[in-house]
Image (cartoon, rainbow, N blue to C red; front, top):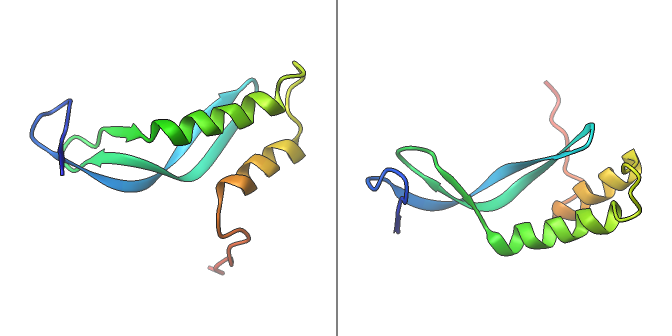
Length: 91
């Protein structure tokens, strides 16, 4: 286990957490991003390699300077989820 850099008390454990990225007027939400999370102060440290790859995908889709369309955002979300489509639960 890794000791937390912020509180120096907690232990950081590997957990999948959501990642939020602001793209102009749009908010991209990527679920289940690998990260280390402190069990005391809840500091989240995202996996650098994963974020680098994700940001490369985003820059490829937005390189034309035009805001991404809904279909492009959907492709990014689908690419980030290995078990897509997931079954939906009825409430």
